[in-house]
Length: 213
Figure 1 (cartoon, rainbow, N blue to C red):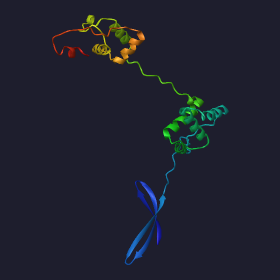
Figure 2: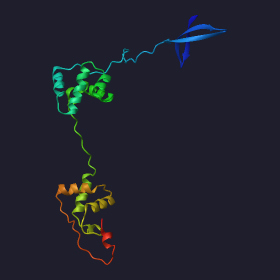
Figure 3: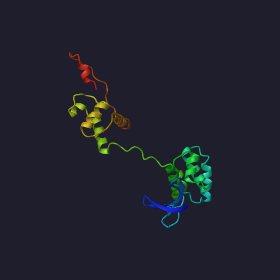
Figure 4: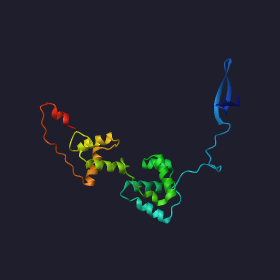
């Protein structure tokens, strides 16, 4: 004998076909899953329809020509973007594009969205703003001022600057700068400073070791 039973699991109702049969003196039941009573609907968009798949908008004649030309570009940056746009315009889904080009979903989606908003500007590589300057103009002026001043006049125990010494002195005056940055300032400003150490003598055997940087 067969009948339908409904079970509630995790707050949702599911249908099962239950068949009863006798084995000796015992009655056994065999269940067959038939599905949910109320199937889950696919994700809907705000207007009530199914969520539209992301794809490039219809290309203008100019854009179509530009994309085809970009497919032969020597740079991978332009060529990869052109390939994504071409495949999407041919009806390929993001998943299919990722499988063909061996790339990630986020990248494909981002490029399609950018093309839909900006058109062929998506092929322009944005300029890198570059590394921000670590010191202000005021701090730079102080470094130049130090270079043009004898260390002894600043209360230091040596007569000539080195990049390491100046970097340490600047740090003591709350200016964070590396020896290589100081070198670039010297080169740009064409500052000449003495680096040769005068001959010094002492009976202390550790004297030379103590005066090294």
